[in-house]
Image 1: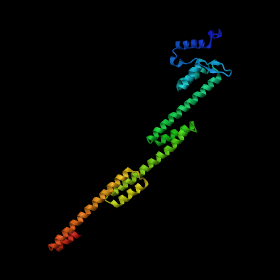
Image 2: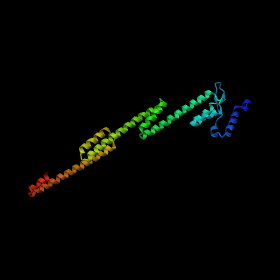
Image 3: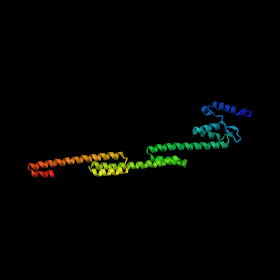
Length: 239
């Protein structure tokens, strides 16, 4: 205060303030680069109070708790311009809001990837409450709807595949194949359906081959019975 009253230059006053803050164990890293000023309407460089500069630094570095504590202390500081204090308070609130929006968007995207759709939706809704025009949240809702539709389709495919496999196990190859072809008509990229169709057709081919072999064996047996005159025994092979 004496230095200011005696006409000492503003930079020397700032240096004195820096030394004073260091004596009270202020974070020296926060003091690097302070001593700057703000341009006034008259074009002159006015040095801001060091506490104001420190508050700006806290806000810029997203040290919101430290900035909040400092601004609360400045409320009773008569040397601080109330307009500057209001501006810093608004800037802090804006930076906190933007940081919250960024965090919510990142969390919502992670939740969508893990198919936690309800929680993701709640995060996107909170983003739009904080920032109604946020395009990323709007796109997130579209992606959320797409992912939900994909999950529903996958569930429908699995259910129909289970039914087709049950028919296959029961030996109803025709019905099983028809059901699988219906699935592929709707979801042509379904790898599971294609594999099941291969299984069904292979099983059907083996069953038909077994039936042909059985038929030929019976015909051969009938011929032998007829050649040897054992006509009464032919009924056993026929029926």
